[in-house]
Amino acid sequence: MMTPTTTVTNRHLATLTPHCNLTCIFLKLALQHTQHLHQPYHPPTSETNMFATRLTIAVLAPAARQAARRRFSTTLTRRQTLPVKVTGTGTGTLQKVSVPGKPYTFTADTYPVLGGTDSAPSPVVYSLASLSACNQVTGSVVANNHGINLGKWDVSVEAQLPTAVLVNGEQGNPNWESLKLSVRVQTDAEREKFDKFVSEVERRCPITQLFKLSGIRYESEWINEKL
Image (tube, rainbow, N blue to C red; front, top):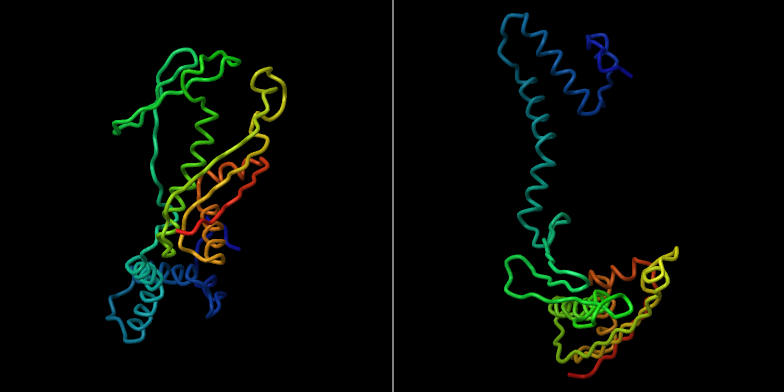
């Protein structure tokens, strides 16, 4: 293999097979261009024109195909994201949380055992509330995708949080130990379609995946109530 400092000569090019890759072709063109700088100008022949045309098509075709796919695709790209930002201000265990550019705020406190006054939901309660609400939001999106009509939602979340690490500073994992999500939702879907609906909601819900991928024991129960 030639090192980056090797001079490309006709001897090197003679070793390149007719089936060499695009890099080889560029090396050939570069050497030919260098040699032509020291030779009288000759109009291009039909053969060289044909070679240049084939090379242009070979280089541009993949990009053209990719552009065509972008024009006709209606799905979100892999790199598309939803920017989210929150800010918090407070003293002690009480914090006021706001979302820049939005009119609403909410407050978080914690339990007396952690030094709070229990004047507002704790951060761990908000984490369970986010799971409950996110399943309903994701369910609405999935139902719209699959032509399912939805009615009322009733959701509950129960979880067990070990406190040895958080309160006493012991070594280990302060994460939730186990969690159960219970959902009752009105739909017009038959059983098989409802089962697929539930599977898709849990796959696409960001907060569900956040909990599942954290390694806790996660359990869910979904009940389909006829709309």
